[in-house]
Structure formats: C-alpha cells, structure tokens
Image (cartoon, rainbow, N blue to C red; front, side, top):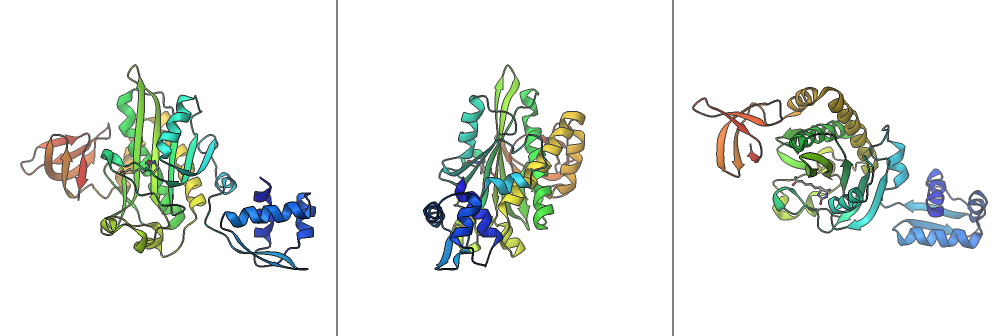
Length: 322
Ligand code: BTN
C-alpha cells in the first residue's frame, strides 16, 4: 500500500518536484525504499522525471482505477463497500458468483480493468478492453420470489442511466428492458443473473458494462454503427471512479425504495427515461417476431405492445428493435 500513499504525495505536488528526502520523511521509509516504490509505479505505467537535488515529478498517470477514488465518492451503507478490484479476469460475473457462494455480503462489488471473456445477454460476447470502461458485477440478496428478478433488471437500468446523466451530462435513455442508448447507439449493457432456492432468489449478480473512454477507432468495426462511448458522446475523458460511485449511490437508493414501496415508483422512473415507449418496435421473442407500438410497462415490468389490429400483447422477454 506504500506505493499508493506515495502516489497521493506525488499527486499533491502534480507538476512540481518533491525531494526523495521529503518523501522518505513523510512515509517514514528509507530513500532506497522510495526509489523501489517509484520503480513499482513505473512498472504500472506511471512516468516520472527524476532530477538530482530536485527530486521526483509525476508527469503521466495512467487511467488506473484506485480503490480509494471509488470509496471516496460512495454515499452508501453497503453497495460498493466490499470492493474487489482486479487487473484482469475472464468475467466479473464469475468472480462475483464465487464470492456469493462463499457467503459474501450484499453490496459486494467486483470490478475488473479488463475482461478476457466478458459476457453479454443471449450468450453474446462483451467487448471489455483494459482501462477503457467499467466492467463490474454487484452482488444482491433480495428477499423476493424468483419471478421478481426482471424488475431488478429495470431498476439497475434506471440507476445507471441516472448516474450517467448526472456525472457526464450525456443524454442516455433506456431501451426495454435494460440497454442504455445515446442517439440510438448502445453505451451500456446490463446482465442480471439470478440463482434461486425453493422459488426464492438466493442471490443476484447485477453485471454492468459501460463504454466510458473507448475511442471510435478502438471499437471493433462491427460495433461502429451500433455502439458508442461516453467519451465519444461528451467529447471528454470521463472519470470511471466517479461514475462507479455514482452508480452505487443511485442503485442503493433505488433498491431501498424498491424494498420499501415495491416496483411502482421504479416503474415510473423507468418510463420517464425510456426511449422505447411511444415507438413502433419489432420484438424478437423465443416464440417469433411481434410488431406493434410500445405503450407502457405493466406492474410486473413486462412491455405492453399494441399491435395493428388493436390487440394488447405483453412481452416478458425478447430483443427490441426500434
Ligand atoms: C448486454 O448484452 O447488453 C449485457 C452486457 C453486460 C456486460 C457486463 S460487463 C461486467 C459484467 N461481466 C460480464 O461478463 N458481463 C457483465
């Protein structure tokens, strides 16, 4: 942890030199130990100028997630407080599932800088490049029947949408059930995986993937027309740590509201952020394609369509095309 305290000191002096002697005094470590810590940071991608008699100056800091930066922005009781920050993993869903099975508490959060086997809905892959996005999974233990899991999906979409709008000003909207779009392109995907026991939820893993600082030319070609990032849309690099804490704050607040008042208030918030309602849509369901106008969410969270013959069709799962 010493190298993190060293980093704090160097950041305080950003742009200016600080002598090795002062660092060693402030951290109560030897000059050799300071030098070792500096080298450790260099290995992590930090760049310094070292000038004799003047000391060290931080000239470049990689966009690396630091636990302290996430914790600092939290206003939660439990969400995000048990933090597992990983450099690389196949999927944070898997890492969170293992923790859940070991009895980890509700609110445990797994974040990875990079996922090598990021998973999307319907068995798709989720592109998760290093340090460019937020790839995280939150453990929830709601005391509800299994049939309530789809509502958590909608709740998560509302929370992430509100956090994105607050932190970045980007005008994200929700496509049913839980894709976040900006100008018709996907900026965030949510994958809720639930494990049940006797028809009740044992735990849920809420997987959230947000394309934060991906550049257009870094996106795989097949995603160019369908995906975007907060950096592309806002024109500036966004702080991932600030966004993660904002998502946790919104999520815990909405989750408490859901526990106290049920789905009704969440449903209204979802409707207000929806880009699906009022539009003509095609929905691919396991039983074929349905077309109609998206009218509302029902009280369970299902999508209500009105087809051309005036019939009401309720969609519980499927892929919506606007
Ligand atoms: C979708 O298909 O829209 C859902 C994508 C969900 C991606 C996130 S990234 C963090 C978590 N880990 C995964 O492997 N998937 C989810």
